[in-house]
Length: 131
Image (cartoon, rainbow, N blue to C red):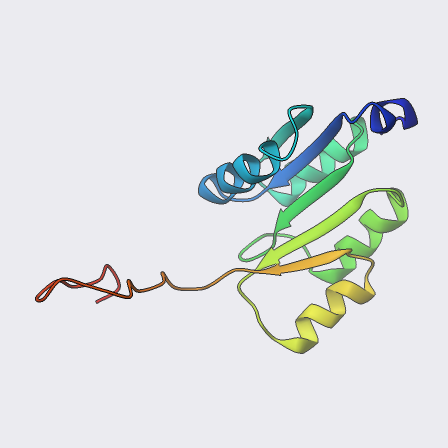
């Protein structure tokens, strides 16, 4: 991303993953500043292709169930895009997995819950979606 664009507060962010996740990340990041441009990609392969031909300030990759080769692919991304803020989203809370991604050059690892959170106060007789 050009130095002038960053100085002007214009940020292009790539979000890679399933539709619901992409929309959620896009709505959160987009609300931070009016000058944020969100680009979405469905798969790791599509995201990698976008990174090759476009400039981004940051990239969020959902890695659960993807065709990518884990931390090795992110090590290559880091080498090819040293200025990119690179973030992984995953359901895996394994310390080993998290450390492998961080060692590969990922700036952040966001853990998201595997199940829906139950409501604290349910009406009598009501059942949660996970029951």
